[in-house]
Structures are given as structure tokens and as C-alpha cells.
Image (cartoon, rainbow over all chains, first blue to last red):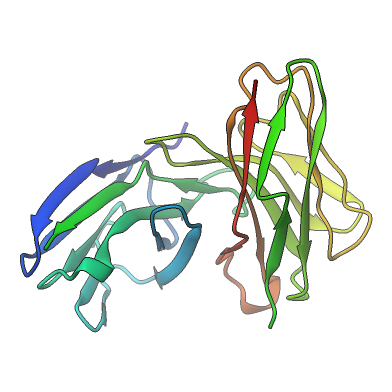
Length: 113
Length: 114
């Protein structure tokens, strides 16, 4: 079945350092979504990428969708303590209902002050 | 403010008991979902519903049941058949009209089986 892998599982950075998490799907995705979950909270939608090679920015966050539409990355420049949380990527199923999103296992980011 | 309300936030259950988690949304979304989250893992889909009176099994539906009698409500029952029910349960909804299944999540219900 379709798998969505995320690496690394954990990342500790000093405040001000950059951070990147990578997402790889075993199948081609029609789109990919990114969510952030703060400690003790619930996932919150960040962005959706649809086009091959697409790059989108949200302030210090840069999202990329691979040319083959099987991988994606999230890069945070100059991390802040407010960036702490777990970042998930998710893509619609290749077969069956596209309503079924497959989530990666997430990257838990810790920012040390 | 529009959103998704889950209750209770914390729930303790004895083995062998069924428990129902509530999920209500006032976003006028057609689709609703239940996910399970375990520590260090991603979200796994339990059930989803695209329309009232219809729902589909997700990847881990065994030991769970749902109903969708109203557009606003999608309760989840964790039955005694669920082998390892201790987890964080997240309800979500999405707006079909915008064409993409971007999820809005509730705050979650944390179930602990004693």
C-alpha cells in the first residue's frame, strides 16, 4: 500500500539555526499538504502544494514539491521557539477515495533557546 | 467562531466498556473524519463520512463504530472489541466545495483505558 515516509523523526536545533524535514511518498501524489501540531495541541493546516516543482513561502517557511510529485520538503529559516512542534506531511491515496489522506509519521522539532 | 468541538477532552475507561466520543462542527462541511494518533506516529484514519447517513471504513476501523445522522455531528464509539484503545482521537472535517480535502481538526479527545 501507499507509504509516506518523513525524516528525520526528531530534530533539535539551537534558536536561529535552520531546519528541514523531508517527506517521501511511494506513489505519485496529486497534491501534498503540511500540518503543524504544537505540543499538546491538534494538527493545523499550513499549506497545500499541487504543481510539480512548486515552491511556496510563508514568512520563514519554504515548502517545495518535487518534480516527480513524490517528495516534498519544509525548510524553516532561523528557527524561533514558536516553531516548536511536530510537522506532518500528508497526501491523498493513490487508489480508492482521495478523501483518505496518508500522513507521514511527522518530524518533532525542538528549538533550544 | 466556526470550528469543531470534541468532547470529552479526557476520558478514562475500564476494560470491557464502550465509550462514545462526541464531534460537532459548525463549519457547514460535508465531510468528516476520525483519526487516531499514538505517540511518535502519524495519524491513522478510522472512519470518514462524505455525506449524512453514509460513512466508510478507514485503515483501522476494527473495534470502532460511527454514525452520521446529522451533517454537524459524527460521534465515534470505541467498543470493547478494540484491543488497544488508549490513544489520542482527532475529529476533522473538510469542505468539498473548495475541491481539496484540507482538514480542520478539533482539539482531540484523549482516551485512557485502565
